[in-house]
Image (cartoon, rainbow, N blue to C red; front, side):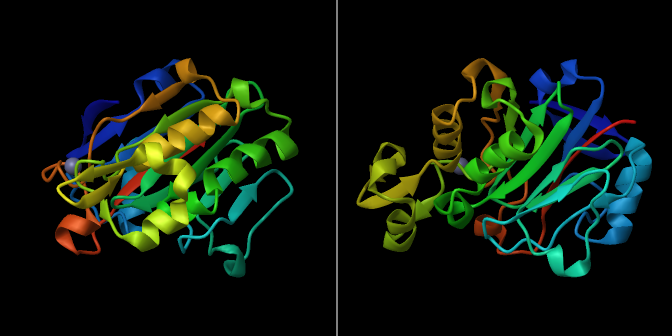
Length: 240
Ligand SMILES: [Zn+2]
C-alpha cells in the first residue's frame, strides 16, 4: 500500500489496484479531521475525493452481505451486514475497522467490487469466502480473475487470543497460531490470504498490507490498544 495526503486526510491505497482507473478506493487512516463514523464526516470525505455518497452498513461480526446492482435497492432492515458487493457504477461502499481485516475484492472485467469486514468471528464463519462465491454465482466472476487487497489489521505481533477464538477458528488454522511465552497469538491476515488462495485467487493478484493496527499508533485505529470507538474507513466504488 502507499500513503497519500489530500486536504489534510492521510489515506492508504493498494498499489496494485491503481492500474484500474475505473476503480476508486482508499483507506482513511486516523490522520483525518473528519469522523468517518458519522454521515457528515463521510460526506466531507466523499466531497474531498469526488465520490458519491458512501454506504456503510451496521456491522455485526456476522457472515451476511448486501448486493447493489442496477435493479436492486436496499431498505434499512438489510443494513446489518459485514460485506457489500456492487455490480454497478457510482455506488460507493464503505466499511469501518479497528483491528479487524478490511478486504477489497475487484473483478475488472465484470466490473464488480466488494468490501468485507472480517474479524475473527466473520472469518470463522467464512464471510470472505462467501463473498468470493457470491461474485462467482451472481456475476460469473472466476476467482482467478479477482484482484484482492488485504488492508491493515492487528498482526500476530499483537493479537493475543484465548481458547474462544482458537476454538472458533479451528485446529486446521494452527499454522497461523503462534505460541510465545505461554501466550497464543493469531495471524488473521494470514488466514484470510490462505483461504482466498485455496478458493482459487492468484497470489500475484493479492496485495497484503504489512501494517499492524496496534503497532501503528500514529496512523491506525486499534480497539485493542485504545478501547475507543475510533474507526478507520475503507472505501471502494467504480467511477461512472
Ligand atoms: Zn503489532
